[in-house]
Length: 272
Image (cartoon, rainbow, N blue to C red; front, side):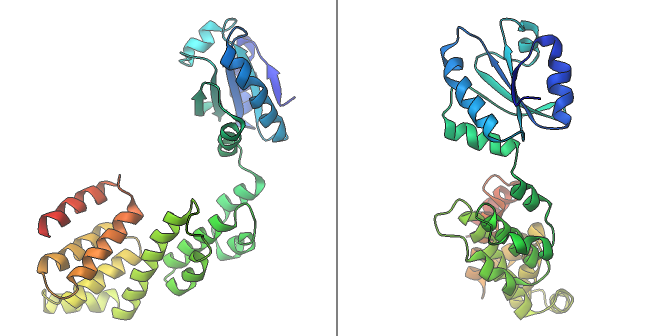
């Protein structure tokens, strides 16, 4: 099948919905009288053809397929919708430039290297991707996260240093770097069982509570980490500032929209 083709409403089931189980299908809802459609069409076609079959483009004239356009809530054109597994997974409206279209299509039809990165879940599979120009930095972050989850923060450090200061992945790298620092602190301060024993003997043992919070944070147990760090801040003793900074690091890793971030940011402000 050609990567770009016009289809009628009667062919939509087979040409788009069924076919999208094999390969992503982008549908361009357009009309001949629509100037923005005529601007977008050639760009969309060129970018799809450049992907060499990784995605197909079906063009639907809304004047000839009004019921179909209504079924997919097309209210303005051009309306571009991507289908995978018979469902819309991404969409945009209006004329866009080639850069936008190229990036949008990349999210729908990842390259072989991107697919390899998505599948990779071990040191053995991620290591060969580290020097790849397309996915190397993302692979470094994924491998660093894997080392952190395995209790090897020292191995994560050099990988995180690969990400340049102003790169799009820098914020993610910094969040992992902060997690690595907490993990290193946890390993230096004691194991979970011994720290809990110390707290059972003395609930005011701030060093043990801070260390336990670091243990929780290092393995991604953010709720318990934040609870313990907040206890240290509330105690107003040693480690108070360290605990406050650690909470901020966890907030950065979780993101401002996280319910945990919002909840504990309010609780932190209340005790400062």
